[in-house]
Amino acid sequence: MADVRETKLPGVGVRHEFTTEDGANIGVLVHHDGRREILVYDSDDPDVCSSLVSLSAADTRTVSELLGASRVTEAVAAVQQEIEGLAIEWIELTPASPASDATIGDGMYRTKTGSSIVAVIRDGQSIPAPGPEFRLLAGDVIVAVGTTEGLAAMRELVRP
Amino acid sequence: MLIAAGSSDVALAFVEIGALVLGLALLSRLAGRFGITAIPLYLLAGLAMGEGGVVQLDVTLEFFEIAAEIGVLLLLFALGLEYSEGELRSGLRSGLSPGVIDMALNATPGVALGLILGWDPLAAVLLGGVTWITSSGVVSKVLSDLGRLGFRETPAVLNLLVIEDLAMAVYLPVVAALIVGGTVEATITSVAIALAAVTVILLGALRYGHRLSNLVAGGSDETFLLTVFGVTLLVAGVAQRLEVSGAIGAFLVGLALSGKAERRANQLISPLRDLFAAMFFLFFSFQIDPADLVAVLVPAIALAIVTVFTKVAAGWYAAGRMGVGPKARLRAGTVLIARGEFSIVIAALGSSLIDGPDLGALAAGYVLITAVVGPLASKFSDRIPIPRRLAGPQRLARGV
Image (tube, rainbow over all chains, first blue to last red; front, top):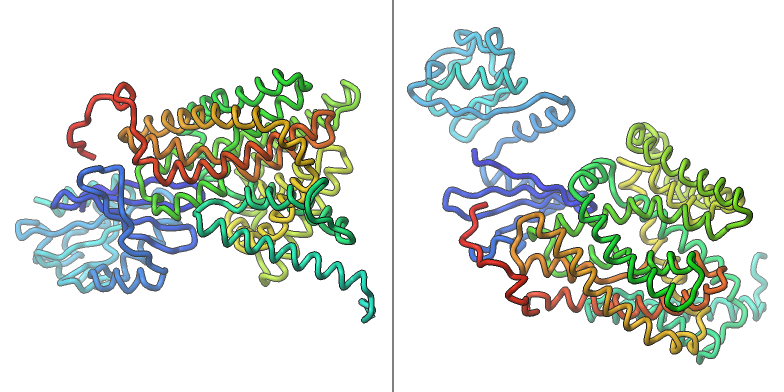
């Protein structure tokens, strides 16, 4: 995932932005009242942007569904806000990963890293709360929750 | 019956209030059409009606007087409310040095002019406040109308407003205590009380704000509105009684609210604030003799010219620290030019001073100019040529 930069706008809300693989700068401005604006920065003058569209909270859910993000992400984000020090990580499994074609129980991730796999995203579908018998495949994206160190250990384990 | 059917006084009062408020509505619509704030138009309307003006009020003067007072309270309540604890913290971290430069550049011309005009030092300090504080109402309206909320210089602008807001938390109670005056000991005591109250409430709001807000945040909209409105007026009244100035009491109530209560109060109080604040602006200039305004017109224009440049410089500096280009720095400077509601509130605080009438007239003229020039300069900011010496070396394509 690209680096997402966060800027607080006092009295307005929070702006998140990142650079796409094509080099365009886009952002999302989340207003305090829940309204969201999608911003696209000018390629000639990076200080300037235009607001593509303004979305209500309900519109935002529609758009994120259309873009293929899962509801799990939102739920996990809510958990993260409540518990300080907890982080989430999305890790894609390559065919070479030792985790591919093995069950979650085999990997003993929780024992080794203290982090839990709370969901798996396969073919754009999210599978929440997979059990220890769940078999991971190459191309799966695992969603893990834990401390920053625990998640780093998790990445080490599943990435060859 | 509450209102006797044939009471001609009441009928006249309704007609006067209705006509005035309707007039304000028309002015607000007109201002919206030109993309400026309605405050200068309200001030002009008040001037036209006041002493030596064209229209006279008969029976509703008392009503407008109290409505104007409530308007001040609600404006300051909203100023205290405006930012959340997290925003105050991050604003303080990143905005302190722009804030100090902003104050030095913009309060100094006001203080200097006051002293040059031979006013008493306290009135001069108030004029410094008038020229210092940018109208956050105008800025947020201009930024969102022009679609600039996502622009890269905008955080610098908003952080500067946060710092000004925090500075007001110290400035207002101190000057208010000084205005009440009395013996030296009494003044020192009331300044100390005001500062202690601000410190306790600010720290309390930062630390226990959520719990405090949860206490009042529940209930229906109706309950909440009545609670907040009641508490604000009550605290203001008690503060006035203790000779701390009611406006400061209302400001502190706003500061103390945070989290959910803050958001709800913002939503529910702002229509009420808009109504009473409009009457305050009207009543403020209503008390100004147009002849006084004419007398201070030249100093007001001179002050506006100087502080347009000092404000642009402050914005230029603040935005420069974010690493944006010269055009963005100029946009940040121009959007900050407008002074508005709080400049008028500060001038109104000093109305009881010997130089009060002059201060009021000068502040009105000054706000009239900057509140019109600011949004216009901001709108056309990209067409203002920037001297090459200031523009600096041409930036290469900038990686972000």
